[in-house]
Length: 366
Image (tube, rainbow, N blue to C red; front, side, top):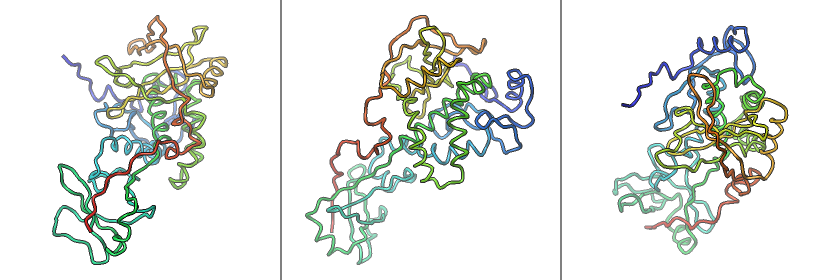
């Protein structure tokens, strides 16, 4: 029989966190002690999801967070990460005029290198564009056509009929995905380990020095400016996140749900990092979170983020809910952590490093 987990057991309330903070720090907080800002001040709070609730089939584990921080990261980064996930497998109809087209993914139509504006005409074949515009039909679903109007008169379109016509849709979601996954992994460990982790030197190196610092430096700025700043700021952390290419019945479902992690121990046996699994829709990623307790461990962890070594020795691990500690498998196994591919070079735009693709076929009816 499948175990039924109550909503209350998936929530870290303010009272729960206050008791946990008092257990760790031996004092209590008045409002809410935010580990990202290291402040206890009267601000709006919310029960934020560990993994964005808009991803399909993700259990709703929640904990108290500052509303300003959670909402800001949600609107600036997680919404684009969600668009990236929903864009996978979409057809031409969905991309052009879907009921919920992915944000920032409106396709461009061009002929001979000239961009041509357009708008949709709907499904009614009797709906025609004005005389100043030209009808175009594109292959759609189930053998039908997608009807659009080009914002050029028929005579001009006729002159372009022998040019190269193509449609292109493009967006670079690497930074948005990385930031969202780091935040989800951080909140996963906050949910599992509480203030014991987020107030440790390892936890503060992510919560305060990455997520909290970037929020303070960029809140209130226009989103495009924040995205440019993020590309530069998060370059040193690009090697924290990698897709988890595992499948089968025994594949991890996400650490927040099944407690499974990868444990990276140094040669001395001390902890260096924890590979936290984050599931979003049908995608699984692993975030290599810091788990060191001394300066030597911090040095090893930071060096791995910057060097070109692609191998780690890890142990499979699982969080023990009763003891509040990690149970690690005694046997170490090698793990590939790819680094030397252009996709992980944020100094290059994703458009520059993608291999050329054949243009989308367009059927024209002038």
